[in-house]
Length: 368
Image (cartoon, rainbow, N blue to C red; front, side, top):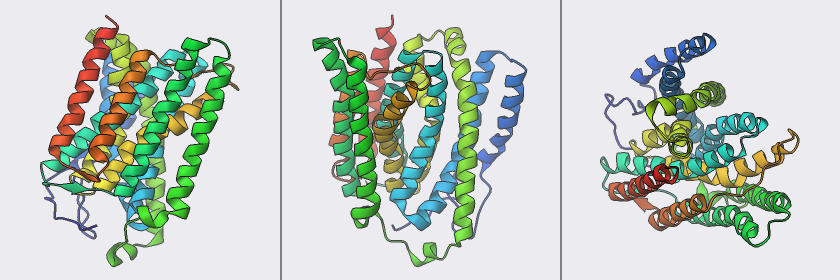
């Protein structure tokens, strides 16, 4: 991919190879131990909410740096997929704690919110941020087409259990389990298709400069990515515990806090990295992170949580409210419509943000 020069004054920009510069956002890493210490001292939840939110930002930046190094050697497809996977890992951990406490509705609301936040908010912000710098940005059209199909499958898979519930209220858990198994298998098949049988369609050629990077650096980047993911999971767990009292103090309704606020903050890593790469004209990575994260939530995270809910004694189903299903369907339709050609601009980003804003307004009033 042809790289365009970026101003070093931009804190989201990546310094040219061999000219690594200090990222001002790294100064915020000091908030990670501070937040952990204050959480141990049982500081007011509203303060903990804002501290943990800000602490996630520099950690997301480290994840972005590590992803770029890995993508330079392994390709943008694998790099974006790895970032999306590790970006979703905190959600799995947090949701398991919630399932253990029997909070099934909270878990399902967070799944819905995560899909909407990544498809509409994160991708929209990324398109807008990249579009103000570049008149037109391109990403892999094969990836866009495959993602469109997977998203449609995800929408169908999440909708059928609820439709079945309205026609037959028996065996809901069995139907949910079997559909989750189908979604999980399709996700594995998509990995095999992308990384093995049709890899050449999705991988961009690696330049000689990128190919000369030492393998040790790649392993170091992988270690950084894993470490940052663990820290993000830690901060996310603190954030999740504090969001309910913080939302009450801020006058926000529970459903709005869960589906909108928690989803946006919980996906801060994906949001930050998507914007980071869009601003340096690496829209393939931005698209892979945002749309890939949404696909993984529906085809991987939801089935895995359902499977694990049985061993912990809190069987979960895939029954969502009609408005949640309608929101996911609308998000999938508008995203597929705007990205199927493999090109984007700032106006398309504004459209996605407008749809997200409309849904957020509706979610706020649903609970009123």
